[in-house]
Image 1 (cartoon, rainbow, N blue to C red):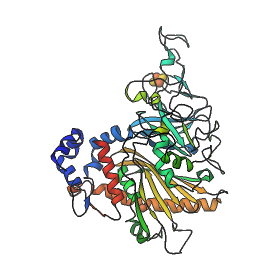
Image 2: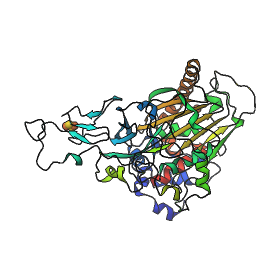
Image 3: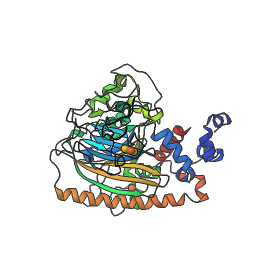
Image 4: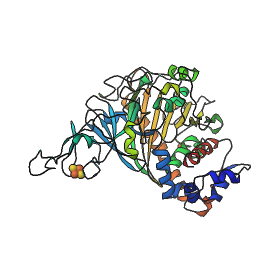
Length: 469
Ligand code: FES
Ligand SMILES: [Fe+2]
């Protein structure tokens, strides 16, 4: 780190971590250091992450199978904001700011089905599933339909958030300015060449509730194989020597390329047939109108019933947001200014395959910041939903999918759910102790990272710093 680059750093990042901690993180040495403890404990650091990462990126926010029916709603927290995922009357998934336009009450506070409308519990303002405001009882006086002169309901619908669904996975982009969703997921799709996600069927979802650890610790733990043989000695049989890390170049610089260039072609070659989910079904709601693109992506950038606010409220109608038809016309002509995959993998050299432990050639892949995808060959997928609530609190759910022509038996589904509950508990215990260690001044130095097994962690942390500058 030289003086000029220090000067170019965001004062806010500098003031939160301190220039010495940043310099130590970036100093050359025999081994790299980790992020200082403050990055995991500070409210200010967390607020900066929410502003520059979770408001600005595509963020994994929910599972489509949990919104199977029209009127299903799922409140989530993204970047500290209340967000509402909704399955609308046309079976599309929309996202809104989960805030009533009357007095800004958090509109929905639990998952469920609201029928054809969403009614605020405070003064009964009622919205359509497209966000349009339909009813404002007595707002203008003693008559049920009375409205103040000049009050236009069409200007007070739920504020939409740009969203898109890829197979069972719902993404939102609060500021509306992230590259097209298809660009965001392209690095992962390229790594799944030969894997037909349309054959995926949902087996189980495990809700772990809150984990007492910073979101980064959960991600870092997922992409380093160093701990596996020690922490998961009874639940997995994946020797360290068979592992390797996966690091794509951190961030592809913005670059305009011609439509249909080689990269785009590769991406689409991985594409999956329309329809989010294959046989076995996630629910009746799957892409009733057909998927918008050959990669299983459906977008909902511009909710007709919604209106814009300044700031993040304009997200739903951002210039680069995908339209209701799905594909941003500029998408195929741009490479993503987003990081590629970070993760690790194991190709087992032995032949011990057991059903009650995880002993499979596997890929542990992530898309920054919070999409976590595990592929366990030949026939299993697991996806984690990690939603940060506070510096030391993260919500986590895991969906388990089979990959094959037939849905797995219920016994197999139960067996997998038990296995993954056990594996996650082992990881949670460790991640919560990692969090506790970061309360110590010893953690100010960041610890040290293996250049062989934790270079993926280092790349992840460099991305965090890069985005916060
Ligand atoms: S706050 Fe929602 S109707 Fe009054
Ligand atoms: Fe683990």
